[in-house]
Length: 296
Image 1: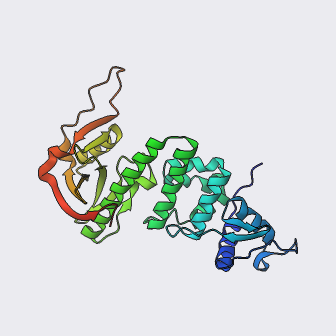
Image 2: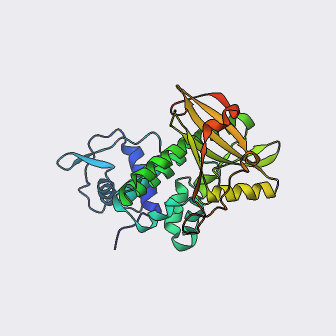
Image 3: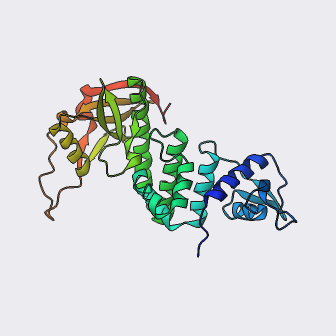
């Protein structure tokens, strides 16, 4: 049976790292029963687990040092990520589809649910570190376990566009937008923002092709947009394209894209999965921004 991550280990490991971050001579205790910080967990078992997930590495025989903690993650997030990378627990697959699906652990695996909660995943407005944490897990799953490098590249491009639009909306409205695509991949839009007191849905598209930038609208994204139109709800599409060293933004109301047609079926009598749009067709909508590569 695989050893599973526990909330006790997560908390004690964080405390151990904070206590020993400047210690270059970490060694196993000669007292095999010694508890860390007079707590419940055995000191040597904490050290052994940190060695297995490569947070501790051997300097020379039986002397260890801490690896540098990434600045773009909290310590608990780093421990959690390393556990996934080295242990590959079955529950990691839940991270592919969004934080909404991680809430199921509250009933099925309370311990993992608490560990995820300690990593700030269930906060409505997620910090930059939490966004990085969630995407690092997703990248690892797609790249290392599913061997889908192109999916990773697509997700990275999508994340860049979402970060640009999140910051744009934050500055425009003075309010913190919700990163909806992190909550559920199936939402059909990426961001929930605000306009004159009303909620606004935003789907973001970014192209790094400077010659002929394109946006690919999925059937689910357009289905959600059409639902917004029927309900007289605000729904926008943000198109980002590169111009020299700056990003340009076109904001389109869903009404401006009503010509999109998914009713035509393909040769298998199914809906086409995506509708291709040339961004340059909306030249009059584009405006200059102060954003440069990757995202200031």
